[in-house]
Image (cartoon, rainbow, N blue to C red; front, side, top):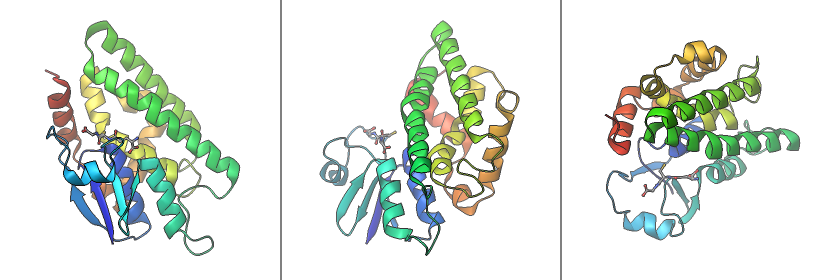
Amino acid sequence: MKDHVDFWANGFGMRVRIALRELGVAFDYVEEDLRMGERSDLVRRMNPVHRSVPIFIHRGRPVCGSLNILDYIDEVWSAPGETRRLLPGDPAGRADARFWADFIDHKVFATQTRFLKSKGGEKHVAKEELVEQLKRLEEVLGDKEHFSGDEFGFLDMVLIPFSSMFRGYEQHGGFDLEVECPKLMRWVKRCKERESVRAVLPDETKMYELHKEWYGIE
Ligand SMILES: N[C@@H](CCC(=O)N[C@@H](CS)C(=O)NCC(=O)O)C(=O)O
């Protein structure tokens, strides 16, 4: 039994849904509507510390936190030598991937939130920072097809959900990401050629509409 508790527009949870599809792991999807103020009994029981989603429940035991869940999925379903692994095979590669995943969660996500919430000068500063952080990630990608090389892997899964807000960024900030980060945008297109990514990423207009409602953007 595998239940994945999530909200359709939750970028953290999208990572897990993409990973499960990539590895062909069947699961039951349980929607937790984050627009409702109160968390469900299930979420309160399974993640009493943070009361956040995603939560992946395997054989009755919850695994919380998207990066932690990706690690778990990798350990359980990508047996060495049998199928492909989500994380790089070498310790240095894994450390590097985790470093950039942390950068995405703690820097990019925080800047995105500040950018969407603010107005005027503060919004402008946040926009500049966000573009700078995306450019830094573009440098990490370099000329590779994917973040870990030829294969779509862990860091690709960590970042690609953010692309469902890229049109929102452009509308909100009045800039063109094709001009600012052309290589990164080509990587987005490559990722979207995958069935797993196409099946999971929501409509970009719906995403921005939801964020407008959430952050009171006029
Ligand atoms: N670090 C966590 C972050 C998860 C998280 O912050 N989820 C938010 C939605 S973006 C949530 O469930 N919030 C609960 C709420 O809004 O009540 C992860 O990677 O899974």
